[in-house]
Image (cartoon, rainbow, N blue to C red; front, side):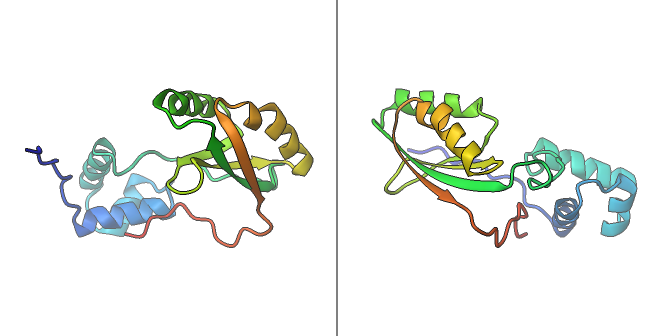
Length: 160
């Protein structure tokens, strides 16, 4: 017999308005947010704190311009591991966590094990990263690199 998984409390339309507004501008003051959702600042603060406590809001961060910061080359990398055993997965995940040039790492189903997202200054810098970091990660048997020619769409906004 399986134990039912408790579901998260349902979000009402005000919660969704708060999440939508903060997704568009995470720097909104509590006062401005209260005006946007037509509640008192105290009520909005309580809701925002609840949304954070319950894990709907994971945090706030600034979006930086990679071109201005010398990280204009966006690269996706397929990684195939030499073995798919729990210890190899754990070693790989631990090694990826400490690499700041790896922006995202996703275990995927299909013809390879992980999909990585990384940024470099240019192809020479990526080649250096591949030899110094990527190919040295534990368990890596094979990689396939996809340099992005044009970033057509980039968003972190989740449709609500």
